[in-house]
Length: 331
Figure (cartoon, rainbow, N blue to C red):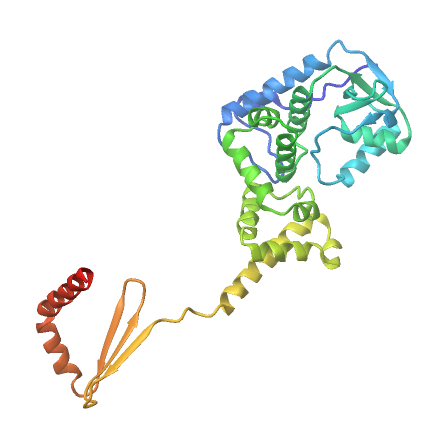
């Protein structure tokens, strides 16, 4: 049976001309040449990985999911389209699996998770290539195949990166798997480490939401009060009834309104005020103290003449003030 190259639809000519395909809701910036080279390399490596291998039919019930998750949603319409295509025309592209490390009769999927799910749902064998791979190689191949197909959102890639690190992979392996630079990996991890896991799960893949919007949400939930509000909000029945594509914006707007409302209600800090009135009540002095500023207000009949006298005596009074500090420190 002929095999379709999983990278056949990737426009390598445009990539070579620095016209990288656009990822939905997510743009990769920085280290452009490195990323382009990584995409070219991953296509070539996967082609070599698949060439000359025997395609076998496997019972999908004998194949376990990957040891590291990379998806937050079921893909909805895309999955249904794939299911109908395979039901009508059969599976044209094999998945990649590796022998299980714990059971000689079982396998673990490396890539082709959705095709595996389709086979499970249809109750038919899945066409697969079996390759002996270790965890590190599996993680890299899984990430690169997803990157080449451009079907993972920013938060799914970040989620995948976090899961790889949690499984013991180095950051170098994670960067290689996702074809990203160190700065992008730092941003991804900053998001998944700050945004509560229950919130990420509730928001799902958020296909149209890119890096900058997720960083904005992260900045909001860094405040413990807003993080609590976010968890409560996504747990409500009304929120869970929303289409997944609307959830991120709804939560982000809710948190911004809550923050603005809380700031408006917050009472202003008390400003220290001191006042003094002369014995003859001809002069009133009020002093408003701030961090590095004191406003002095003189009122009543002696206000103007006293201010003029005070100005003329400022040098002497300041020296007396300094002398009083010296005496106090000496004691």
